[in-house]
Picture 1 (cartoon, rainbow, N blue to C red):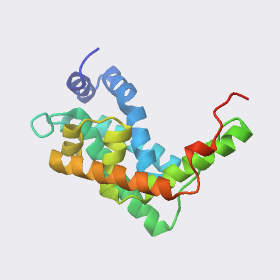
Picture 2: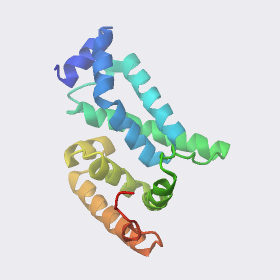
Picture 3: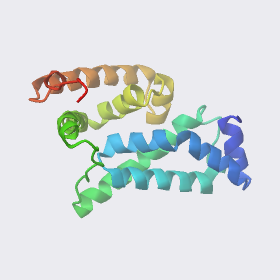
Length: 187
């Protein structure tokens, strides 16, 4: 499998398989990041689509000297697009939409309460903490890549992540919904 730089170079030269492979490699990660940051399925879909349209139109813009890592470049673009989407939502006053509901009604109810509480807790974190928690904690982006995407030192990423985890733990401990309430037995 070709590396990211080769795929981007192929996309820049109009070779569709380059962009398609690059999209296959990163679309799910970018979508999950956008979903966790925005809390909106619609925004996440829009940001993911806009990002890859941007990549298609600007594959030549990727400069290995400026951004050592194509993943950091992608997250940086996604971050900017999310900020623009958030500003647009604030102007129009639109709120978050609901995620797709699970299949089993009883189980779905139990898990939806826990998931909703966790999503609310993550959503209530300051943006700087939420960014690193989503990137490093949920997306498993390494600290160096996250630092490059966020344009901050690695130490800042580590301290924000530590504060985010502590705050999230405290928020979930305070909540009325907890994992212990749920039965894991098969029904």
